[in-house]
Length: 507
Ligand SMILES: Cc1cc2nc3c(=O)[nH]c(=O)nc-3n(C[C@H](O)[C@H](O)[C@H](O)COP(=O)(O)OP(=O)(O)OC[C@H]3O[C@@H](n4cnc5c(N)ncnc54)[C@H](O)[C@@H]3O)c2cc1C
Image (tube, rainbow, N blue to C red; front, side):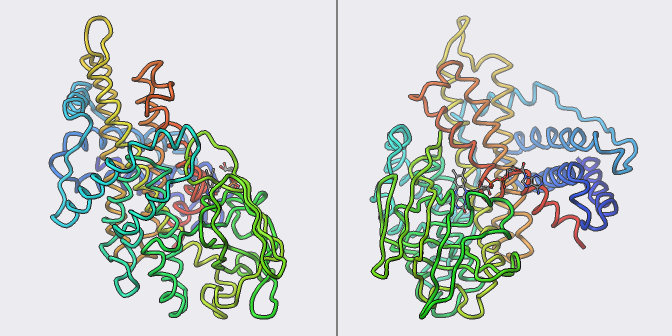
């Protein structure tokens, strides 16, 4: 483990030299991506040393796998980085992994992870709510592409789930980011789309407001977000602009008393039901410095298409794009035409003009952390479903969970979940301190945990055989849902290159 971490550190140092402290990162994208990912894995390795003793055996399996992965990831670019011989032995006896798998099957995939009294209570209350209210409806919402039922939102609002990281002074519960992550994880374990992801949007907007809203805006909006009275959608992406956020072109023109918005946006999740859209729009030329964040009011709609008209003639239309998973909130292509927004809803007021990019990034740091929690929830669900299935399914006269290879796979699945939790929980605690400093580790948590969710759900599907492909088995939903995780809030290659990579290489 020490050799692996030392190698990752050497690689980061060499990449700094190669790219002139990140200035020439784009000339060496493949190297930077590999180094960023290896450094992420090294950070996970470090966090694995802190996990509870109840999951120590799984953590050891994860650590050995990460040590091998760091070496394999860097090997093809060792020459470009001038690292010399990077080989070190990694010993992982299959029997150790099988033992972790056998334990995971015996516990039906539930990994004991003790917490302090308050967090334990948070987790068990959310679990009870999610199992009682959400889980029984998750399959129906997915297969019918229904909208999240209104009672989920009302109940979650009453239980305070939208305000877990909003300060008490603004109507939140201030239980901290780990409580928010545990809540997210339990809700996502029941349904990524119909429960766990409802928390993402208030998290992003609340953090942007806390970072740059005026006092009046914080006092007005944060309590409403915390209670669920106001549900938000986030609108950054456009049909022709995704990762290159600085090129956003939807325009906000100054008019009497406010701004008039005109332009198209894409992939605006929950835009139909939402009461407000946190909109990144262009108020002047000049790339990122010409962008401003607005809180745009709109009426609620519950279908897959909508049209709204303002008294002054402004229109807002939306049409949901069909997706194989992540159903329940619906993600819309929307178009604004002379849609009026008052001056009071420019985030940060006059001083907020041109600060939208920075405020959006502050929001995204929170969103990425929260997405690490969402990924852990989907991964837990897949591990549990698979552990139950392999204990029951018999082939060649024995439950398939008794075969060494099945146990090995389950052992890897459990160890990957432990690793994803280790970095996500650590990132949550770090975000309770200096959020700017913690943002890179939140990005690492998102990068790593979302890959784990994809990998574990797919392995789980494989272990279900043909039934894993049937819609009536929840594992097929977990696979479809997990696949969106590495795409949003910084698609994986960009997250590695431009968020994690930049944070590592810049001095
Ligand atoms: C279901 C779903 C829900 C979403 N919800 C929201 C939402 O609520 N609000 C919102 O604003 N957005 C949302 N998004 C949009 C999401 O954030 C974007 O899809 C994502 O940021 C990537 O942008 P893009 O799709 O335009 O891909 P692009 O930016 O076109 O990237 C595609 C690929 O091009 C490559 N690439 C791009 N630039 C570079 C580069 N400089 N160097 C090397 N390779 C590069 C990468 O391989 C990348 O994966 C959602 C997306 C989905 C699928």
